[in-house]
Length: 67
Image 1 (spheres, rainbow, N blue to C red):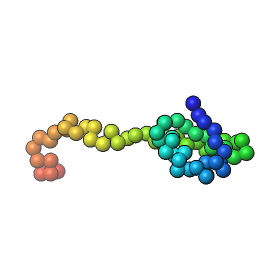
Image 2: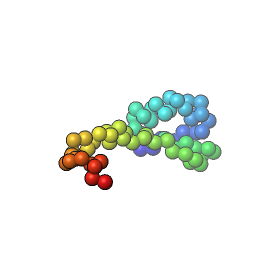
Image 3: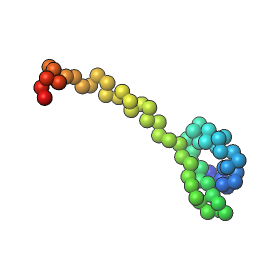
Image 4: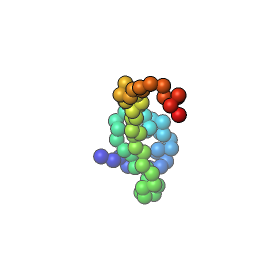
């Protein structure tokens, strides 16, 4: 579900709104004169990607000497 918020209110409460989106994972549509102009969405948590293949690759022999 997406919440709508007027641009003026977003400007006044920006940091709190960003924290709420991070915490609740809910999108917010920012409007200006009731026309949608932007969407604030939670960023994908890609921290789990780093190191996901650790230990799955092995080298046989000297990889530098075989150029």
